[in-house]
Length: 337
View 1 (cartoon, rainbow, N blue to C red):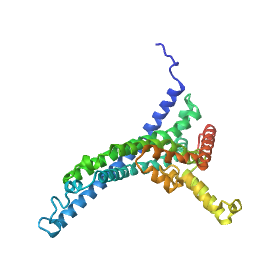
View 2: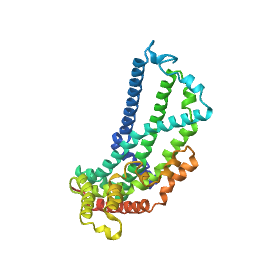
View 3: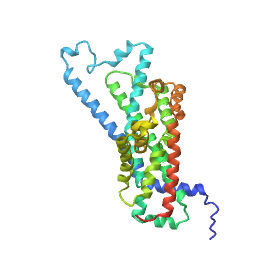
View 4: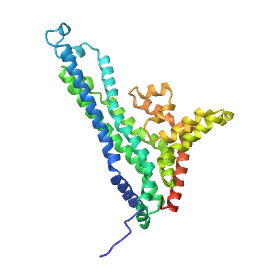
């Protein structure tokens, strides 16, 4: 049998490393966002059922409150018939914007998954001694660490975004059934293809920003994971927090006109909270946020990518790359806890 190794390219090897990380942590990166989206939809369904039961008790047949009302206390058909086309578009866009809330739970869970995945990525393999097996293979420490970085910053967010979009679609179908129950036209009130296209486009366009913003957080957590001999969680939390307390106590940064508040926000907050999607928006002004919500893709993307002009984003990204490089060096030298 002729075995050729010519087809085993570095990219193919890296692809297998990504598959390994995904299958070992499928519960966090795949099932956790699905469960989060399912729970959010279940709570929405219970809310609609509760609202329906309450309305039927209050507006029961023959009650004074039901006089002049056609069906189930609210006749959406007659209400929309009296609305202008412009008002219908505004209502449709508002309902489309509310559907984006179904994406929040999967993305919130993603933040916790990335945080604890990065924190345990290099420590756990030393603790269970599996690092010895992986080092016995023709795999470099660089590729092994970078596959974990790519899983945390690319694979996980992409899966969570897809799950969020599916959750949004399910949310729209659920609300459409409620509208139909009350005599309304779901296509007239909910069908806003431009708005939904904008929401999905913005979610996908935010991925590169998330990667840059989360780099220092993932880099710091992986550095602690590679360095700590025990309890990497405590080291990852205590070191920046104690540094912040120390600087606040002595107020050493006041001479640089920064103050301890800057350190808590830009260093502690970024290192420990950067893994959570959407935290990069904290520096945007009100005008930029309003532009992102106007359902015009061009101006929305322009407002979103204005964050790329912030110096803290790039300084944090460079610091994240440096910490990832340090984690690679530590992994090459250590194989025990």
